[in-house]
Image (cartoon, rainbow, N blue to C red):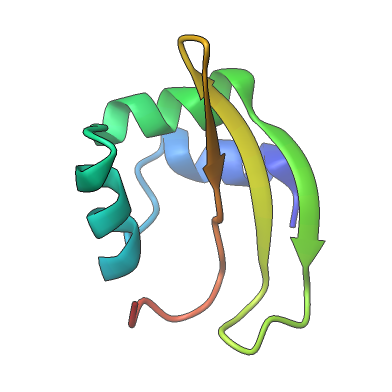
Length: 80
């Protein structure tokens, strides 16, 4: 996956949030703008998982203030 493409999709609102990601976001008391900003402005691609059975994905590290925020954007289905 390409970090620039992930950032472009986020800027354009062309993404969906999985049920699992929603749960994590609420538990961490984060809003979507914080997550978008963490990836768009501070994102670093750490690992790629091209063969993930749920669809291609990766691990991106961003920051909300000084707080690290690992994210797992993927190109798979949105079933959780």
